[in-house]
Image (cartoon, rainbow, N blue to C red; front, side, top):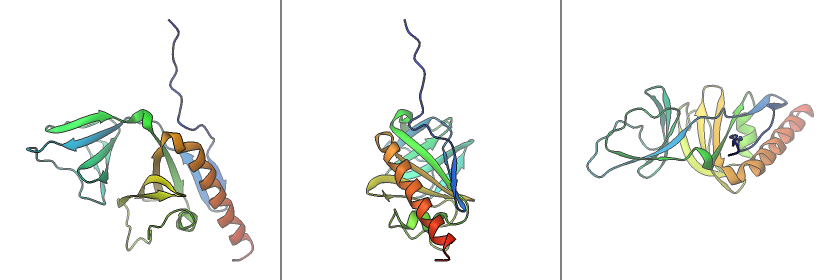
Length: 168
């Protein structure tokens, strides 16, 4: 029987345009977690993310969270592996808000969207999850949109870098 190798949703080398850098999110297990009606839980509130048991937990919508990494013990939760359905990007460096302003309608000012904040939104008309991190943003899109998201992010990065180069 042939051996199958896992392939990343989008393969590209980290890149930098101007002050912004883009890298693929390292592969991690992504597990959806939905609380059962009778279960209490200690998950982050809507619009926030948190670290629980060494895993990153993102609010993804009404009664839905994604656990990135090894899922901690979550009694009373319905869990489903979503790893092969999503692609992740890390956008870091100065100018990241200007890059995302070209692609996303969210107000990403730190006073409104501080580190740990997360939202479902759009990224160039694609459904996305955007999470503020200490040095930039974690962006998740459906795997089938990974190539398009990469192209849109690189185009916006080039645009911001060109504008900065001419003093705009």
